[in-house]
Length: 187
Image (cartoon, rainbow, N blue to C red; front, side, top):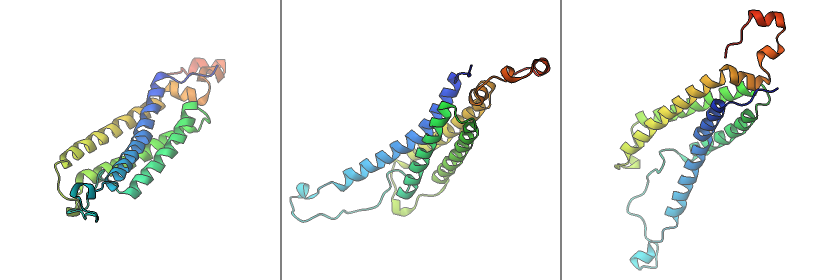
């Protein structure tokens, strides 16, 4: 009998998918929505003039991240989702190691991104606004969330029930009887 996927392992996989796939896709959708809304503003109806009105100020960054980096982040999220689907199924057995490596790589990427946003000064070309402190608080929360989810995932995927799920059998099912007495299974 194949060991079942435990509830803790399900939580670990779902939490990493949310953090590394859903959040970047929502961020991309949010930035695209804002860009679409701001590009479709028609100032001529407000001023009554037929010629286009040039903006008084320009610049600004809605997400604190460049569009190229946002697309790269989204691509990584989609790749991570594919790996997570195989990890959810539990096949092939090597997916446990691949998922662990993917979680570590994504965490390093997001921690570097969070540190960059927290500690680099904002260029003057982006302007000064009151939302910078909110952005810093959100980056701190993102940093802590990344670390906590990663630590939980790595802790749980290395526990006995998760190893048995990916292996496809419990250790005492395949061990000879003489060896079972000497090597107790700890889970």
